[in-house]
Amino acid sequence: MAHQDVLAAHPIRARRRLPLDWLGIVPFAAFALLFLILPTLNLIAGAFQDRDGAFTLQNIVNLFTPSIMAAYWISIKVSLASALIGGFMGFVMAATVTIGGLPGWVRSPLMTFAGVASNFAGIPLAFAFLATLGRTGLLTAFLMNVFGFNLYSTGFNLLSFWGLTITYLFFQIPLMILIITPALDGLKKEWAEAAASLGASRLQYWRMVALPILWPALLGTIVLLFANAFGAVATAYALTGSSLNIVPIVLFTQIRGDVLQDPNLGYALAFGMIVITGVSNGIYIWLRARAERWLR
Amino acid sequence: MRTNRAVSWVLLALGCLYFVLPLIGMVEFSLRMRRGVYSLDAYWVVLADPKFQSTFAYSVVVGLLTIVVGIFIVVPTAYWVRLRLPGLRPYVEFVTLLPLVIPAIVVVFGYIRLYNTSSFLPLTGSATGTNILLVFGYVMLALPYMYRAVDTGLRTIDVRTLTEAAQILGAGWGTIIARIILPNVLLAVLSGAFLTFAIVIGEFTMAALLNRPAFGPYLQFIGANRAYEPAALAVIAFVITWACMAMIQIVSRFAPKTSSRSN
Image (cartoon, rainbow over all chains, first blue to last red; front, side, top):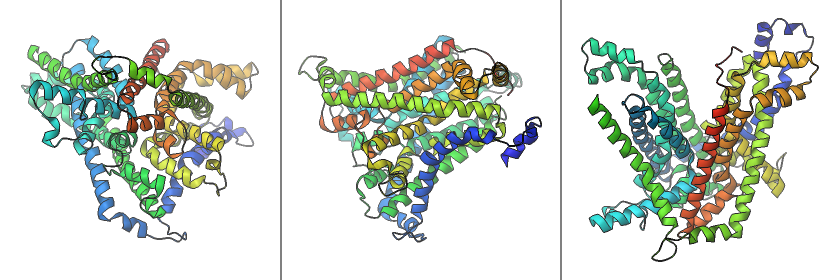
């Protein structure tokens, strides 16, 4: 169908007898089908089949057992907390270098560092935090020796909800900085000046002008951060082994050794992950389109 | 305005503190192996470990293969879509963004199910087959970054005119892509390549689930069994990430500053 549009758009090419333009896209289409789309569809199909291959909704129903729901719940909590806190901190840091009046030379190193830190994820990131906030970590020891404060007596544990959230912030904040800085650049100086000359305070300017313009970009990026944290496996696995049962870890152990003792339930688990990341990315794309209306 | 700036400095400093502390912790911990004094022992132990050498070499080779295969798939496609199939552009872009939507662990689960030993394409049945599967999996992971980098590069050149000029001079499609288009977007391709390398070198999930002797699973193994070596490895990984990003910066400094053209 799209092909006819192309022909219509280029009448000269329509004179050819055999339209062969589509051949150029075949390698890419084959790659995408074989290594992205078919494997995913195959899993989704598996989520709706019983062991004999007949259609069933039982696997989806089985997801609603307490242990699996708990896994989804803690995953959602960690992803949401790291997205909200990371989004807020990233926004503040991006704001300091764009509209906060800091000299221009601060910006470039911060952006470069954000590029590095947003890619410094996975297992090494877990090691860095174990070396800092683990039981014998630098900060833990420092607090103990200098302030006599035992971090671990407060119930803090790196292998927990808060530990994981703090660790995830290391790639969430930089990602927020990278995505939100262009949006902040789009805030025109004239708007602040117009608001000020009409007698608006800083707070009123933010509440009535800047935030209404920024909110789709802000919210959209936070949703993206959520999906980003939700699919992450390696950091959590290196940090907690399989002691904190977030969904990706449960899925990981399921793929390795069928711990759920039901392959089709594993497919349903993966399907649930696709639904959650898919919905959040859908929201992101929708909000992104709204954000771009103002920030040109 | 003056107080505003002071507040900005304080906020930025606090934010940076969060990032600097784990890095200092990581470096400090990696130097602690010898009791009482700081030493580079952990690094020597790691670097001398034959398993470090073999897994690192494996991941470097897989990373380079990923880049080559990625270029072969992405450059002709992005070029062709711009030149002949602009109507398909939104669909192709959507597909290239899918790897950000579908978690890698889900895709690799799909591989294991789809390419098992009794399937139409039993890739997981042999070591070579699994290696191929891993490379294609990594190409898939890097697709959003690679495609975007190349497409941005293509925007700065006049694809149509270059193609027509080459055709008038008698060039075939292979020549056009290899000798006209690729050199023109080489800088963009390189920045995509460095990013791909940074992603692939320590990747854990796919390598572990496909049972490949890659650097990522090695990192995890050391992390579970040793005390100081993991911190040394984290420092090494951080340096590699930093080097890749620095290369991207250097490369993009040479990139043409032409604004976008209409096609």
